[in-house]
Image 1 (cartoon, one colour):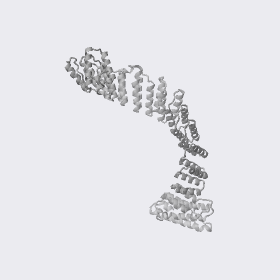
Image 2: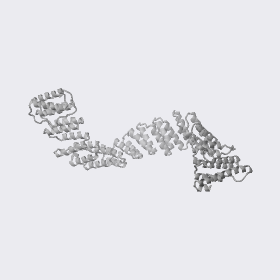
Image 3: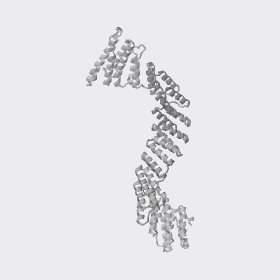
Image 4: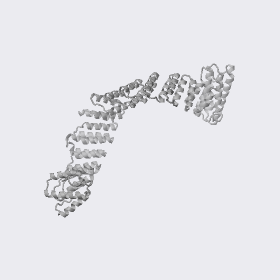
Length: 636
C-alpha cells in the first residue's frame, strides 16, 4: 500500500502539535480531521484521498503492530516522511495501535533531514497521545538537537529524561559530547563527561566507551586546550578504562597543536606503559610536534625508530621534516632524511635542495653543498638555476674560486642561465684575492653570455681592480658603469678617487684628478666631500714623497685644496654642511703630510700647497666660530 499513491509531499509538518486521541469519531468528523492533517503536512488532494482510503481499509483489517511498523517503514524508505507523519495521526484517530517504535522511526526520519524542530514536535505528539518515550526516543531527539548545535536544548532534554525516570545510557552522553566537540563547548563537554562517569554509564558498552573520551580529546586539541585534554585522560583512567591507540594519537596531536613537545613525548611513554605500541599515525603526529617545536634532531631520532619498527614514513612527513632540518641548520640530519626519502622513493623538490645548500653555506660546509648536488643526481632531481647559484655562493664563501668556476660550467651545460648575482659573487671573490685580471675576464664572459650587469656588478669590478692595484682599469670600469646608466655609490667614487690620487709608478699629469672630481664628487654625501678632498690632497702628498718629490702632484694637491672652497653649488669659503670631526681629522692628516723644505724645484709647489691649506684652515676656523661649534675649528 505504501508503494501506491502520491509522492513525498511537503518538506515538513505544520499542523497541530497534538493528534486527536479519541478513536470514536463518526465518518464525517474523521474525514474532516484527515483533511486538516493532510493540509497541515502540505499534501495534495490525491495524497490525502489515498491515505484516507488506506486507513479505511486498515481499520477493517485490524493489522498487528508489526504489520503497521512495516507499512510505516515502507513510506519512510521512499522519503515520504510527511505522509508517514499524517498516517500515524490517522491511525490514532481510527483506534489502530501506534507504539513508541513507530514514533521513533518517524523522529529518526526527521533527524536525518536535519529538521530538529519537527523531531521535537513528534516527541510532543507522542507524549500527548499517552505513549511514554523511551531511551531511544530521547537519544534521537538529543542527537537531532546536537547536530543542529542546539546544545542548551540537548542539555535540558538530558535533565528532563532523568526527571521522568528514563536513565541515560552511554549513547546518550556520547551524543551530547560529540555535539559539544563540534561546537566546540569544552566546558559543557567535560560537565557531561563527569555526569556520565557519575551515572555509571562509562561501562555500559565495554571498550567502545572510549569513544566519547577520544572525541572530547580531539576537540580539546582543535581548541588548543591541551590541559583539558589531559583532564579527560585522567577521567578515563580514573574509571579504569584503557585508552586505545586512537585516543593516544589524538592526545599527541593536541600537544602538537599547542606546541607542547615534552608532553607529546610523555604521552608516548604512557603508550608503552599501557602496552599500546605506537603506529605510523603516532609517529607522524610526534614528528609534526617536533617540527613545530623546532626540534628536528628529535624528529630524526623518531624517524630512525620508525624504520626499526617497520613503520613507513609518509611523503608529507619526510618533506616537512627535511624543511625543518634545513631551517634549523641541521645539515647532517638533513642528509639522513634525504636517505630515508630515497628508500621511500620520495623525490624532494629542487627548492628543498637549494635551501639545504644555503644551510650548508651558513654552516661553512662546502662539502655538504656538493653532497647535496650529488644527492640531486642520485634522486634524479634536476637542479634549478637557484640551486647552482647557491652552490656557487657556497664556493665563494669558502674562497674556492676553482670549484665555483667548475659549478658555473656545469650550470651552463644544464642550459641554466646564471643570474647577475652569480657573476657578482665571482667578481667579488677575485677582488678579495687580488685577481683583477680574472675579474675582468669574468666580466667579459658575462657580457658574452648576454647577462646584463647591474650596479653591484660594476661596484664589484671596480673594487677588484682597485684591490689589484689597477686604478686605470678601475677608472675605465667606472666610466663604463656610467655609460650603462648606473651611478657609482659614494664608497666606489671615493675608492676610485683615492686610488688615482695615490697612484704610483707613473708621472702624474697636471690636472689628472680634477676632471674625475668634477664627475664623481656629486656621488659623495655633501657632509663627506670636504674631508674627502683633504684626504685626496694628503694622498697626493704621500705619493709625491714616495716618488722622490713630484712637484706636479703637489700642484695638483694645491688645486684640490682650492677646490674645497669652491664646490659646485656651495658659497665660499666652505660648503654649509660639514662633518666637523671628520673634517678636523682629515685636516690634521693633510698637515702631517705636507712636505718639509727640500729641493729648490719643488719649493714653489710646496709653498702654494701650504698657502692653500692655511686658507682652508682659517676659513674653517671662521665658519666654526660663527656657527658656535667651537673645538674643531679652533683646533684647525
